[in-house]
Image 1 (cartoon, rainbow, N blue to C red):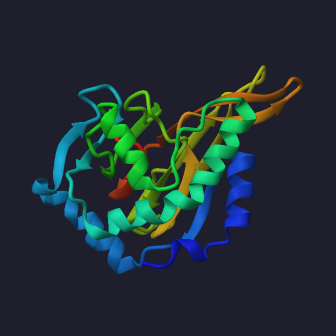
Image 2 (image 1 turned 135 degrees about the horizontal axis):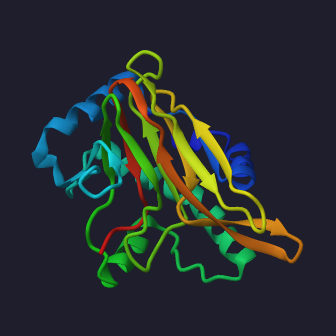
Length: 232
């Protein structure tokens, strides 16, 4: 695993503030991506499996990791949190909202657990030909961290076609804006969990954001999802 801290966070923060998302440099090697994707078939690693068609979330399947997580998953969450925390606090200040997030991920997750949000939320997702994910938000309780990360584990154009990550933002008093990103293998996409501040005529306004995945046209697409709050 390459150092998350070695990324140019000045650029990433600027992109997240401008677009609501930002693509990191490669942080996992092809070998590491393959090993994580291969975990999907070891059901003992996961606390639950979600069939998206059953719940009308789309088509495809994803699994929530059980604790303890594979070391790389824990390391990635710990590595990202201190870099995302200043963005979270800045957004809260602009919107005049509380900023309950402490300095460490462990302290924040302890807050989640004391509030009844005790289920781990790191996700491994698998999409096959014809699968897709409806626009949604990953909100699992009252305590929410405003940013999350998804990491591509396959090679677009080789392992699969289609399956772009989609982000749709409802701008204040304007039409929605959409963005589509193909996730290169081993790269992470930082994106908005629920809403983010955008400038308006009256100052800062909260712009709601949802995310999803376009239809996979061929092959198989795996991603690792890192959510920074646990679930009730």
